Image 1: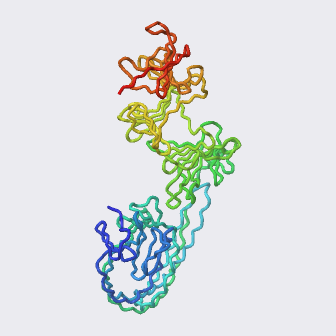
Image 2 (image 1 turned 180 degrees about the horizontal axis):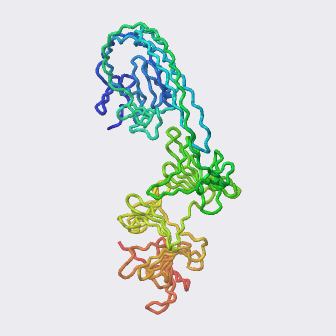
Image 3 (image 1 turned 30 degrees about the horizontal axis):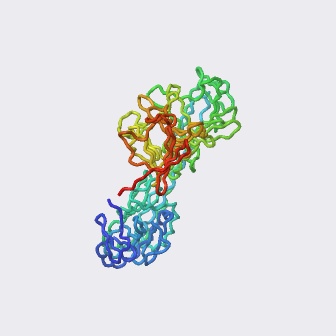
Length: 638
């Protein structure tokens, strides 16, 4: 069934239909649309004063009730009630998620006024004549002589009672009495609450109200002595007034009957015969408060280790495994029950104490829960005492089955508060492995320790494809490891082995850190099954500093960018820039320095060192070995 969603700014006369029910805006609230109201019937005569009303419930907690001829517009909160004193209609102030408005509570149309009601109630019937006095008790027979611990003599028969006086004749009906005065107002009720929702509230108290915003019905939470349930408030359609019955004639008050005479005295019972003498019995070891147990024959024993002082039953043991034991030789189970009526949340219902030399050092307590109205929930708590300390509650099994260690506030089925200790929990296995399984309705994952290996497994049994492990911070996934081995930073569906994604439109980065700057700082290495294939390494000191490039393994540096930004070959006169088949398109340079020192040319077998520089109109060549300078002879072409 759909929930209400009234128009935000209705005009007077606008209608709104939901769930086959039509409402109309009257300028102040939404009123359930119905047929015309019938004409008002004549007023009936005043009836007799009724009995005082039952105790009423206290007013709604938080919500207010307004009584006026027009809709309140200020100081109004969601759930407030307004009784329109002109029409007697009751409305609730309801917010449907988009707007707030007064909505007529689901009451049917008023039936036509019935005829005049009957006159006051029939006068009281005359009192019956008084009961005749009972005959006097016959005298008891004399007590037989005391036998030696014999049975008591039989009781003498009771004398017969006097006859009952006759009942006085019924008086005629008296005249109708005057109308009674107004009954006293009912006492103030307990706290109640009003809840507006589409489903019944949880944990209600007797007398609470609930307005169902789906169908606009009002319910009260009612306890009939055996059970509690939500009962709809009688807001159905009012039937027409039945016709008034004819007034009966008032009878005159009858006179009281006369008192019956007393019955005659019964005769005394005969003396009972003396009983036979009982067997004599002896009690050995008896003393104050000792419990008597059976011995051999007729002998009884006062147990020195088992006493009862009127308040406490005490057993003193002299060997281990002695004490209070319950046995059953059949398929039955024993019960120890403590039935108490405590008043407050946390009150103890039953305690099992452990004392060491008269000092309580541990305790198991069955405790009352927080429902002090129905008194139907509870907790099991464990207390211990540190050396020279006080009893402290350490473990609670609450009314929801949640286990709390070091706290009473549950955050799930297991809540652990270690206080000032940094170690909240330790899990130990004497086997070669230790694990924690996490299982939901679909799959099982685990955290497992095997020797020196820690394993974190998603879908441990491998039942489902496309499982992953995600690391979340502040509710957002910051790293994801997929079932294919791809790892994404700020990416939940990485399509490569490593994806680094910035959280904003910014440059993502990977930083590799070493504490000192000397020697090799960090390297990125490419490896196959045949070994290392290539590497980019940064060297901060010790020679060949800068960003180094390696290929065909990681032992020979091919080139580097030094710390001044120069791009240098890994060795002199060893590597080419381009090849005979792969040429660079253009080379843009300032001066061009040429040398083949350490080698020779193919013409005269010598080596040289030259620099080519550009002038405004000429191109110059400098011999760096002789210091001589030349210019190229250039011929202009069109």
